[in-house]
Image (cartoon, rainbow, N blue to C red; front, side):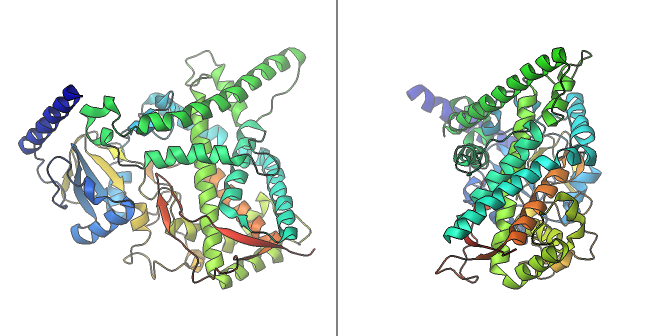
Length: 498
């Protein structure tokens, strides 16, 4: 113990000396930090809110010091564009937090791995062979079946006149939608009772990744894992990899059997990945390396898409007139006796606008995953030095009154007859990021969220529980790497009579 204390004291002393000897010139303005810890004490439980507030004082580009790490925060569309478009090659890589490094084969992820040739090849295969319109269309019948199961489950709850946890159901359904797209099978039973373990595993990953971890800001003490974050989150990664490994091995055996019997493969995302694993000429995939990629798909698909659906329903329950308008749109298009399908999405502009407005106010990742400068870069007249980390505050940009009229109001109409989209070209609106590291799964996420929301509005009317009104509905946030609703949304479904 005495040795560890001495080592820590010596390390902190060296950090202080290095800080004063190597102060970076022409860095953006920012609040003065404390010795050793810098500005870490200012972050609080909602860093996206804190940094947004600080930007009002120090401007759209500011510099803070978290321990021994200098962090630049961008809070305006212009600054975000400078970083993500004009200088995206200099900010192609990410610092990997210790909580993320706890997973097996972290360098095979799409979200975090170094943007080298292997990463570019993996991403190219995903965008050209997995997230294409053709590939998504081929598997939409599987997603329709999962949505129909949700409808039948909610009809039972409506008959019992009981409340349902919309976030829980949205997560479970999204989990099955992704699972059927990747594996052609469910991870959650038809009664939605087995989603709890998966939700706990995924949220532990999201929550720990969003924690202020001293190991990330004082690298010399990284080996000690002083807060136990890495040990805590590793359990989730190992368990999820076990689940995926079982399903992958089963598919490999089925494919080997089919190759001898003349059978056919499932044609889902897993088959696409396994096809590439079998290529002999330096394939970027192996059976081990596809598991981190699948984990990326599940986290992005189930957690962020499920959370967005919950936020959308919460906003609709707070705004009954908007909910009524949305229900009228989907009911007029699709007879009550018919099922909503993905092919109906282009004919539902108001529901699309609701999803866009939800993503503006409640971006899935409020602080986009961090970037790290590969070299000195001048942004807005200031220098971001090599090795500095960069955060884009998408939450703050989406609520900035300079770019959005009445930014705190939920107004889907602002996206009607508007060309603003989330594909990375409009820097005042960045729910999925932009540049070379924009989320590649946008086509699948967009389909799933709109389909889910349309189904919930088409088959049911909704009421808040007794004692809760639109005015008193709690909209507090809980911060992780993703942003979820602190108080789960409960509501009563009322079946629409056919």
